[in-house]
Image (cartoon, one colour):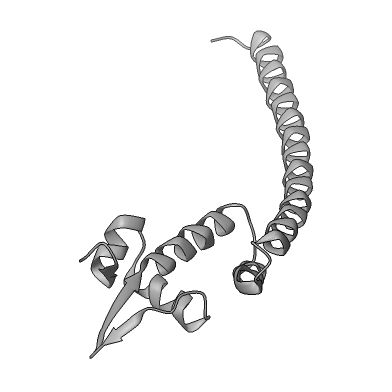
Length: 131
């Protein structure tokens, strides 16, 4: 490895991903490592892109959304368009995640109430029985 490039093994270690994951992202056009014979050499740009891909996946962005955002990097407007589109997508995903959290909070409360009811019911029924 140099400061400029990393091997596939080094990328896997640095980002805790598998070679298959890197090859998949490459096949989707999200990464474009240099080729030296059969070896893949990942540049700083690839590392930055992978970091964004992994972050986007963690936030629930689709690979198509991530790819579209990455493609906006080279528009020549100082990443203004990329930043604005990223913000818009993030706001949409945040709203969805907050809805999911509210749904989960409601389901958890209902489940806790059911568990409490079942416990009380078992205690009531057990109180009338001889041990």
